[in-house]
Amino acid sequence: MEKEFKQIGNRLALFRKKLGFSQKELAELAGVNRVYLAQIETGRTNPSFNVIYNIYTKYALSIDWLLSGNGPMTIDQSIEENNEQIQLLDFQEEFIHKLNLHKNESQKKILKAVFDILEETT
Image (cartoon, rainbow, N blue to C red; front, side, top):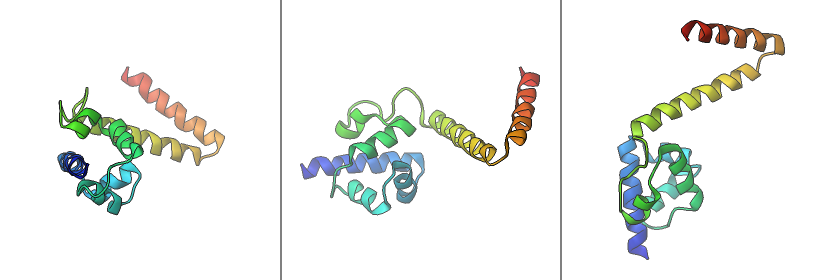
């Protein structure tokens, strides 16, 4: 079992490096602390379902590849496409958060301006 943990950890570290993330960055995205991620990557512990799921949903990590080494590292989309989508979602989330800080009238003006711009570009 320890050998399997080590292999899963090695694959997760490889995936993280391919994304260009530090342990701290991936840990934050996975919802864990860096020490726990380091323990996974070194094979001292197995990743929880939540860790695997968080990385899978954000970066299309192939669970089959992570657990067995079979098949491609990611599914359906390239890492670059996923990164672009994540950046867009992050921007949308930030926009909505900032929009909610304004009063109703200001929100209406901002949304009208956005819709006007969209009308011009379509």
